[in-house]
View 1 (cartoon, rainbow over the protein chains, first blue to last red):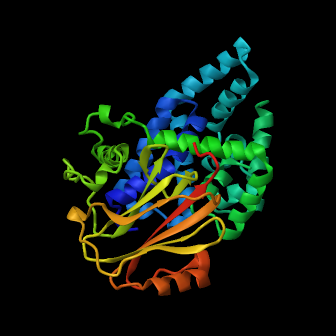
View 2: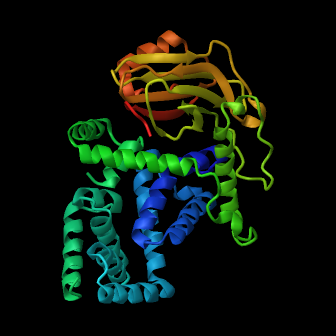
Length: 160
Length: 236
């Protein structure tokens, strides 16, 4: 797609905007930052329409680009500090287990390489199957299993 | 079933075989049906967002491209807010130049659901009694056709122009003389809109649709728009 006219941009926004926003909220755990990611994704799409794949791959593209931008935000120094302090506070205040897990997972994600963090997001937060992850990442199912084994080993070391 | 699989089901990206598998699973899994309904409601809420999230409060000079995205989205929402007002009104030119229409002709679909009208996305959830209104945007005179295969597998040609339509003013939407009140057949209905340089006889289109089914090829010198309209007993 060389050009992206207004109608096409609107159609993509209406169709995939909810997906981007929902996943960004889930990954970041912060509604304001999720809206920022939504804006970034669609602004980038207008700026560089050549990056948009054909229709069949659009969903995978939006999943991948949302994950990428969210991980970058989590790695941001300010967010790292926030996550680490939240993780500590959640543990000491005996907050609900699910919140402990989500905050803990985010704090853990920032320590991982990009490749491991992506599959960890898809597996632990999106609860996708190995096949689905392979589809989005563009690798074999076996490679997904190998990467998740590494994530699990690192998680065990951190006692998550 | 993951949100990813349900998102794929809601989009038009899932191959027919996989789509059938998902539909079969949904038929026997209340939890996944419930989650699908949540995703549909979430998408509807997103489409009806009355205000632009955060982009408009940022200095435009810092984020000019973002404003362009939201300007387009807001225009679409403003259109969808009035009951087919778009038929008679013309949108003013984008103040900032916006994202220009490049002349690629296409079909738009509007859904009237319980008295409210919205511009359709590529995937829509509707219920019996809802109305579909088609519109065309083209910068050149063109022959327009709208085809469908409903949930029962029935192929139909909703509209096939015998004379050219357009050009539409500024390449914006103009209504087609076809609106449809949905019947009680539930399931996924595929709708194709073709905007062509040459006339496409209705009988030829219907014969091709019956023969090729959902894999129907785009006729030569035509642009193609595709919608997946899922009809359920009670849409959000």
